Length: 193
Image (cartoon, rainbow, N blue to C red; front, side, top):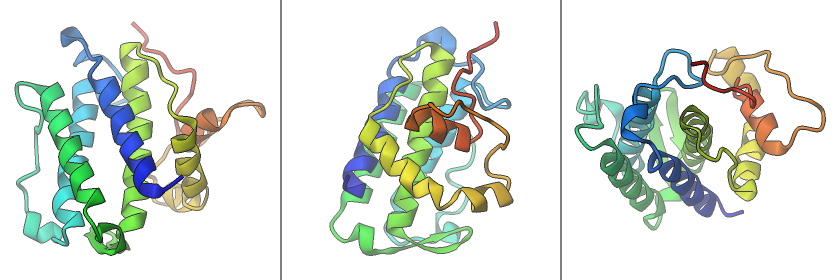
């Protein structure tokens, strides 16, 4: 699957789950132990907002602290939609995928950054889905694109403590469940009320 199409689908999958959040669910727990639904969605919206100037060639210093704190405001669903739409425009602008992005870990090809964001949307989209009781299955082609990329990244992510380790799935687990486990998620996670 084309990277930009996979990225678009990951954005759509995430926003589809956010659209299903009921008013009383924003403080519900998620598979990210320290984050409730609102904190998790705020994290992804912040990432989407960061992607716009970074994909345009700006540095972290140039962006400064304007994206610190709460990005969701009074209408978090509309804010998430708007941030995703702007991120998609930035990612699909002609020539963007050939650029270099200036990340905190160093200069990175834009295509690599988009793969990171694709996985971010899928994994956190799943987090939202299971937290609110929405359908947690994602487009298999998009999952495959993320899984193929992450297979080459997992050791770096583990070494840098970016994922939890030790989650095991049965040998017959599908690709989505194996991807979730690689990111430290238990595919059978459910809220404990």
